[in-house]
Image (cartoon, rainbow, N blue to C red):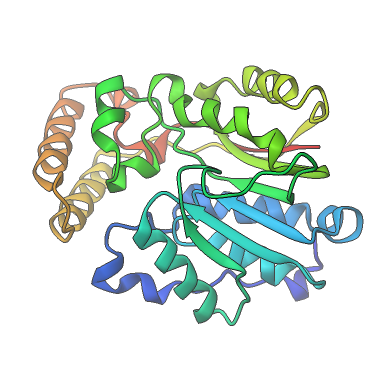
Length: 279
């Protein structure tokens, strides 16, 4: 990690306050954990990897790639991909706000917008996936909404498993992958799938950083509930009614349970987020 006196500042994201970006996944605890992991691994990235091209999948606000661009002191191009058009626009704005250079921010489902190569393209792939375990119908209903940024289906793995099948044709032969996982995603099984999908090339994995999130008090839960309701009412997409109903329903149920049985809808408080580095 860099010396304390030259720590890289977190990119600003004031542009996300604009109404047009109300449906874009804002920087949250998982985003900042990702920044911590990159900063912790900065010597490896700078001195060993020396990437020429970074590709981030599911970039959301673009804060992760913007931060990496500030970390590196050599030329690297940054390409961001998100399935939501407004997220692509937001990424460009965040890069501009932080005087960072972006190759492009393109709209697409995982790597579908890229022309794949047998020798790979990216020296580093970043992926903060939709990792929260949800019911199948909830995952389907989340498509093209803000919920799509976190709803992961069974074991939180539907998008993760699709992503794994595609990385071998995108990652360069000496490239590395950084992916954020939840303990419930079964990181050991994910590591085995990545090893198999890359014919053993990405066989070494390490947990760069992990963080346990404490369960909220009832007062904190109430504050979060109020914030969620206020936020949802500011959105302009079609599932607003459904989201409000879901939040209210889950909060009512949480008040009927013990403190250690809060709804999984409050995904910010689930335990053990991990950043894994594969090489």
